[in-house]
Length: 291
Image (cartoon, helix red, strand yellow):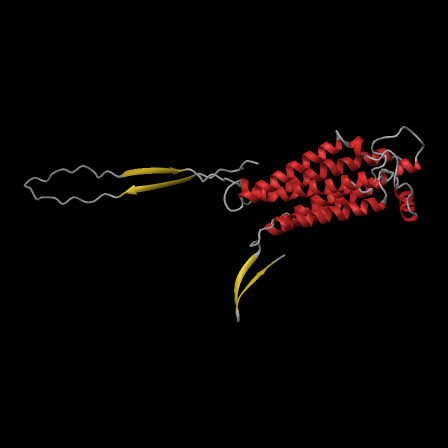
């Protein structure tokens, strides 16, 4: 993402005049008024070469990992989904707990709940997260390197959580509730991909990773990110059960994976010296900070 603001620094300097000594003459000589020379020097701002310097290599590595992971996920969701998804269920019967919760929460119009869950999970939550993060960046330092350092952990969290979700879905082969409880029909490629909820992992991962970044940066909208982000994530999880797409255990595991990814990725990407300060003590020096 390119820089949002380019700062131009203008320096001006005036050359002071020196008084010339005068030689006495019978008639006073007229002197011309002193001239002041002015110069204005324009200094171009330093180029933010985010891929160079001490942390440039790490940025390139994480951006590359995120891009590669996103391509792998998209390929697994499109070209190779029919090859990897279970044709028949490997995990067919729900336990009594999932059964009872499903009966209590499923809507009479599951398709409406499915539509709403797609809106909250794939549209509202990502747009909200991007909006508040860009607003916080615009009020501080919108340099390219700063934007990458803030946005990449969130994107990498999303990619990691979705790759984990996809791998477990393909391996588990759990029948979705609408398949188990519905009328027999033509089989679909998504029929046995219930465990665990990708919508829930996505939204909880977004809220957690963005919240951690906002906390580390002391952004003003941190409480908004946690409050609204977690509310959207919980709502999305509920709607996936109401849509008869997932059981409660699918949603709970998805939430754990999302939160875990949102905590782990920013922690692994944190630089060793971040949030650390050297302070004197009675016996020498100590490192203090927040974790």
